[in-house]
Length: 175
Image 1: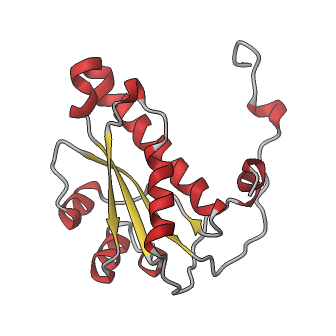
Image 2: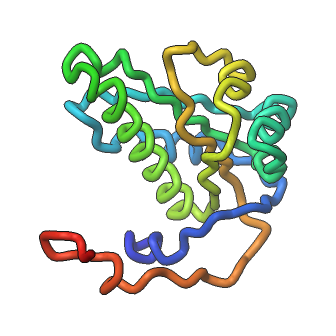
């Protein structure tokens, strides 16, 4: 699939068919994640693959009842790891760059999923401490995104986007 077609076809999937995702397909998504740019190429993030139904249900509950998370056959959880780049970039690396790294990696996973005929939904609304507990994430790391991935079972109408004239600014923001 052409990259620009991937951009056009991507949408937030909130219903999934029970079709499993084979390991080769998952590996392609994870390889795309691994190719994502990061500050200093330090990849200051971790990715947790969740397949277990009970854990997915707990994640859905931690995400304030977003039950579609548990429907997806695979859920990726992206976690910022400040220690991976703090030694080089100090406070800015620990507070910003690791978050940027994790979000870019998640975006690559989303686009790879679409290119492979799958769908996903970026979930950022959840209780951080609950997600940490469910997945045994150390306190110094920060969950950044939950990304359920599977075969879409919903097909909403495309949403209206801001016009480029309102979104893009030449050299300065309009007041």
